Each structure stands twice: as structure tokens, then as C-alpha cells.
Image (cartoon, rainbow over all chains, first blue to last red; front, side, top):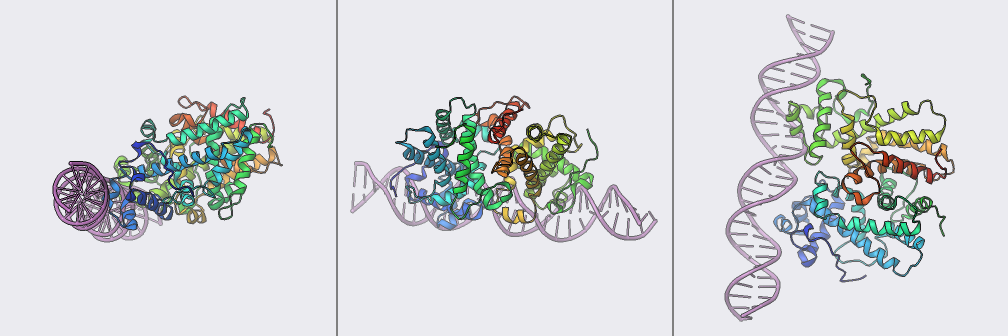
Length: 228
Length: 228
DNA sequence: TTGAAAATAATAGTAATACTATTATTTATA
DNA sequence: TATAAATAATAGTATTACTATTATTTTCAA
């Protein structure tokens, strides 16, 4: 449990920094729990305020609307995964082994890792799996992208692409493979749980080991190196 | 231009079969155009009725709500792709070549293909790319799945998985590769257009050739056979 | 310690959304 | 041509996505 980590995010994502006040932290905490519970479509600031015993108007002073809150949570998540990848790969020389650690982190981010009191990482992971892509599947994607709302995801993706290129500098699609690993990690957990015909892996509770194995197989097969 | 194709879909998807009346066909036609134009979040039946010069109540007699309409459009699209794959692979013996045709069809579905008067397939393709996954990323996914709302997608995915297994019967992840090809086809067109840092391919207008090439590379590399 | 500023809570209000209901009118068909 | 079915017109309701105003509490600097 590392207390005191502060995830650093684009200031444009919020009206007031929620990490700087106790009400802000409660907004983060309860929005994660409530979106996970009722889904993003049914979620709104009135219900959130009710659940956290505050008022709608107070929540609106932190986030412009629920879409910005979702982007905030998604950014928070990827920045946190990025931080985990950094500390987990710090002393590893071999790019192959670093890529393996990256895959493990992607799949098991929420387990056995430093945690922040006001964020339940395991619930946040489930939320990202179910709702994450809605952050950029909107009509405002280009404007939002210009504002830098997806920087955390893009930076992480490019960090992973660099490792991929280290593993095999001839591989032509490092960025695509990187983003595909992120998407697959989330999609196939979701498929295993809800649409099992769309995958070949099984997940039991929070054991995503088969997903990890599959991603390793895909990545190393594509990079033309058998696993160490 | 093939006139008279009727895409067959689960009757539970609608209250009245929109393919059976001219108002129904206008609902399909205009909902595709309007969702593409303003995005699914802003879309509603009142705006649709206004645009197509009918009334909200009339639209509600065809579809329970806009989410069911989206599922309908997504199902329609995959059923149509499935039909295209069938006719395009009909006389091809080699599974490798069939897989190539499948990939081409996924990427270029909307071009040079039989069309149905009330559906602009090219716009529908863009809609599916931008909004498609919202059909199953909801709290009701399990209930909807039980009702068979995703049968078309699952059947198509399993059809492609069979071809993959024909190409390489030792490959352990045929369903995952199949669904991943679908997701990648759509995601990387979207990324190239809106979040280019997340991919390595470029698309120009409706030329998705680089996406096709990448999918071929991924598929055949994973299946351990160099392309013919 | 007190007084100003900032943050939050309480309350109310508005325009739009996601529907349902009722009745009138048009169209199809037997 | 009568009847039923489909559609249009209209109205209405509960909820949503906000904004505005004022009251109360907290912060923290002089």
C-alpha cells in the first residue's frame, strides 16, 4: 500500500482538481463504485450526489459533465498502469522480459499493487473494461484529442510500442500491436465473462491467467521470437 | 445493385419488422444517416421523426428504444457482411485464400457490393466503426445475450473461426483471432482517422488498403504460414 | 480570534429527453 | 365499401442535465 501517490493528469480534464480535496476524492471513489454498479448510461450526478451524501451542484463544480468524469477516470487508470509498468520493469534489461511484465501488468493491474485509499483499483479495472472505450467513441473525439484528453493513453501506448521495437526492430506495426494488446486485454476478459463465443479463454473470478497467456502468445508469435 | 435482398434478423430486435413497410425502411435509412451525423448520444427518436417527417410515436411502434435500434443496425450490418463473405468465398477452395477474402470483405464491406436501396452501406460502416461496440457494452449485456441479440455477430465470428482452424488446425485461439480481426478492422480505421498515434496505418478517404495489409500480416503470421 | 474568502450545501428552476396515452386521419384489404 | 391496421397529431409525465441563488460551513491569514 503506497499512500501519497498522486496521479498527474491534464488540468483540462476537471474544473477543480479532485485529488486536492476530500470532497473531490469522495467524488472519484463513489463515481467508480456507482458507474460499476449501474453502468455509465444510467449514471448521473444526481444519483452520485445522493450516494455520497453531497449535492449535484457540488459535483458539477469538479467536473463539467459525466463524460469528462469518465475521461478523467480512464486517464487516471492508464496513468496508474503506466506507473506500475515503470516500477515493474525498472531493473529488467531484456526487452522480451519487459514486454512480458507489461502484459502481466495490463491484465493483472488491479492485483497485489500499491493502492490509493480513495480508488478501488479492482472495481476501476472492471469499469475500464466495460466502459473505457466510450471515452473516445464520441462525436467530440477530435476536439477532445486536440485538448489532450487522451494523452495518458497515447503516451502509454507509445511506451509499449518502444519496447516492442526493441524486441524486434523490423516489426512494422509496433503502435498497432501496442494498442491491440490493450484492447485485447480488456475485450477478452469481457468476452470471457459475457460473450464467451467470441474468445477461447476462460476467466475464473479475478484469475485472468489465460488472457495473459494468450496475449503473450500473440505478441511473441507476431514478433517472431519464441518466448524465453 | 441487388434489389430484394432481405436480411434476416431475430424478431425480438424490433416491435414491428421495419423491413416490411415503407415507414420502417425510412426509419432504418434515416436513423443510419442521423446517428452518423450527430452521434448516438445526441440521437433520439424525436430528432429522427423530425428529420424523416414522421412522428416520435410512430418510431416507437417499431423499436422499443434507441438502444434496440442500435442493436438492430449492428445485427443488420454483420448479417450483411456475413452474406458478402458467403458469396465472395463461394468457389474458393483454399482456406488461406478464403481468409484473405474475409479480411478484404471486413475492411471494404461497403465498397463495390450489392446494395439495398434504403441502406447506405458506406455510412452504416462508419456508424459501426464509431458506435458498434456500444451495442454490447451495457449493463444489460447478459440479458440481451440470452435473448439472442448478438447471434449474428457470434455466428459470423464462429464462421471465421472455422476458416482459421482450416488454415491451421493447431492454432489454439481461432475464436479470439476471429473477433480480434473484426475489432481491429474497425478500431484501426477509427484510430487512423482520429487517434493516429495508436496505429501505424494510414487511411485516405475510403481507401483502407493499409488496414487490410496489416490484418493479413497479423493473421498469417499468427497462423504460422507465410502468405501465398 | 476574527473576518474575509473559498468551498459546500440546500433549494429551486429550466429546457430537453425518453417515453406513454389518446384520438383523429389515412391507407390497405377482404 | 366496410373494416381493420397503420400512421399522424397532440398532449402529457417523469427524469435528466444542467444553471442560478442563497445559506452555511470551513479555511487560513492578519
